[in-house]
Length: 443
View 1 (cartoon, rainbow, N blue to C red):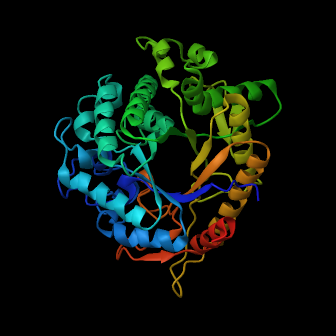
View 2: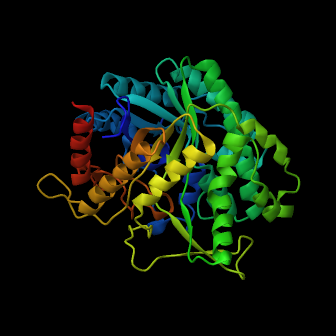
C-alpha cells in the first residue's frame, strides 16, 4: 500500500457532541447550549446536555479506542468548561478533566490530538458579540495560552479552529447553527476574525509546546459544474471561492481571492482585508474534513453567488443527502498538493451517516458505512500515489453523538450508542477499521 510507515490512523469527536455534563463541575453555558434549548432550532428539541456522557465514561471510551487499535484520537476542548465566565479565572475541574483524558490516552498508547475550537463558544463571549467582536482574537489567544501551558507537556498535536466556513457562515450568515444569526456580512466578519485568531493561536502553540505539530482544519469540497456551459463553469468557480479558496488562500497566501473580494464588494466595507496576511503562518499540516462534492449550476435569480447546487439523479447518497463520491476526495487532495504545497495533509474527518439497525449479537450491521470507509481510504491511497502528502486519517466519528441541528437523528459513529442507556456497541465498520489498521501497521 502507498501509506507511509509513520501514517497515523485515528478517530475524531467534538466536545459538545459527546461530553454531556453541560451543567456540572463549573462548566459554563456555550452557544450550542443556548441554541439547542431554543425551540425550533434542533430536530426533536434535542440538546447536548447528556450527549454520550463521555465526561463520565471517557475511561470506557479510551478502552474501546485501544481495542480498535487506534493510534491517535482527535478530541476538542470545551472552551466554557475551562473558562466558564467570559474571560478571567479558569475552572480547575474542567482542566482536570482534560488532564485525566490525556493521561488515559497516553497510558493506552494513543496520541492525543487536541482541537481548540470546535464551535462551542462560551455564551458569555457571544453576549459580547462572539466572533463578530474583534476582541475575540485576544480572548482566543488567552484560551490557547491556558490550554497549551496546561497540556503542552503531553499533547504535541494541535488544531486551532475546526471548519471556519461552518462556524462563520452557517452560524452567522445562514442561521442554521449556533449562534443562529442570519447576516451574510456577519459570516464574512466572523471568518476574518477566525483567521486572525488562528494566527495568534499558532504563535502561542509554538511558544508553549516543545516540538508542536500544529495546523488548522478546513471543510473542503470538490466542485464540479453541472454542465460544460460557460455559465455553469463560472458558477462552479464562484462556489469554489465561497467554500474553498476563501479559506485556503488566507492560510497559504495571506490574501483573500481577488474574484471573491470583487463579488462580496460592499459587504466587506469596514473590514481591513489586508490584515489576513497574518493568517499565512507556517503550518505543520492542513487538516481536511471531507464528506462530499458539490455539483453547481448557474442561477441568475439566486442570491449574491447566483449559484444552485444540483443532485445528480443516478448517484448514491448518505442519510444527510450527501453524494457518495470518493474520487473527489482524491481530486481535492491532489489539487491541494499542486496549488498550495502544504507540508502535510491530514484527513481530520471523513465518515457517513446511515440509518443503522439495532444491535444484534453484540454488533451493529452497517455495510453501507463500511463500504464508505473502504472506498474513501482507497481514495486517500490513490492521492498519495499521485504525490499528495497525506500522513493521517481520522474517521468521523468514534461514537454516535449529538449531530448539531439534527440532534440524535443522524448517526456517524463507528460505535453505536443507545441514547437511553448510553451502552456502546461496536459496528461492523469499527471491526473492519480495526482489522484494516492491524493489517496496515503489521500489528
